[in-house]
Image (cartoon, rainbow, N blue to C red; front, side, top):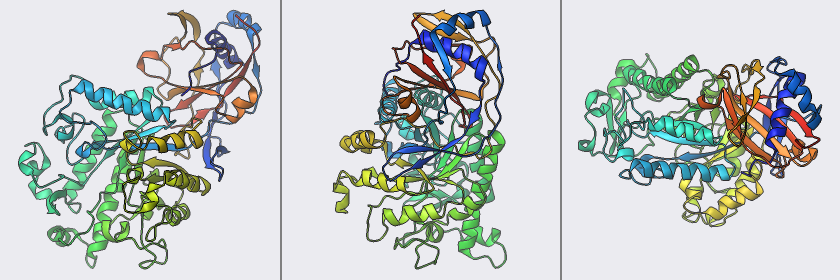
Length: 556
């Protein structure tokens, strides 16, 4: 992102006075992509009326009015589009680069990843914190991951909580943190002697089913479902995450072997219920209960899933996509995705459409359109596969424009609100030319993630702070800590009003995370000489207050 360009004293004084005049009003906007590849704002519904603001030092306000004026300008809310990247930890795909690296080296590598994708104007990271019955955080239910510490069950060489640290570093950079967990995969191979004695393989061996060279939790056992919900509840309760995220691992992809859950089927299936229907019901129960628990604990935390890209082939269902995928969600993985969306159990869906634009069996073009038609009021983002660039038998992936062309298409389709990319190293350690194309042609301007909640409360009354000198600059000083719902300050500056209104690349943007240390004393960066300033706040539900707009008219 570009350096922050407004003059600090001007901006601070502007905010202090204008808040008294205009108040703060919550606004909503969702993103609409156009065929040209731009991101535009589309108003949805007003979630709350204008809020009052407590008054501050009126004498100081009168003195400062000589240097600015508040403008009654119809400034649209910030543009929105999901721009996410998966950071896979299983097998050390993306991070950490080595499980035996010192913790400080792992931290440095993680920060480099965050900084890199922030520089591309991404706004979310999907970080894998549970790979196979393990954890990248201290847990009552799971041992430490061997992909983190080199040995399963071994604590990292630090006294801090690594997950809390990762979340904070993401938020400091204006990135959402989506906690990615694999619920049903218990091991990545059959080498059980390397597992911790605290792993569920040893603690609850009857929960395990061996299949295709690894172990899985049996989805048909009620005690397994209860345990997995506890795992999710622990994360939601203990961490300031933005979302819980599952990928496509439900029942495993089918091979020649038999998934031996016959005993559980005999015990728990309803009379006359087929094996396939029973399996789908098992997954539905977990999704429904995880959704309920998340909203019970923290209603602002999202629940998102990134399933395999094909629901059903049209040969098996007239409502399916015009594809010939070898396996599908509904028939092979027992993931009844449409039911999840119809019932409002999930907040967003990222189908993994990792095929080329015109693949002969499962084309990106066909599947993006199919998911657009079958979104059921759920935010749909598209999962793209840059890991295939220049290393796939499909020659389309040797064209560096394949991903950009996919993005152009998905932006032109209604009900598609962004993209996520698997995986982080695919455009970081390699294919940086493709990343540069995305930054230049699609992500040249920052955007907020979509607002996924249809009836979220707005930010309540905000106290006007006192302006004080702080270090070499200035800071806002509050009588009491800012409310927790006020999560980020959003600041746009521009040389002219048009750049501010259009959010052009000439306008600069700063997204300041409001953490514990700056909720009573909020330092402001030194700035340059931009003439126009817009200020708004973002709540933890993701809705933005109506921007306040000011023109600088003099010098201090």
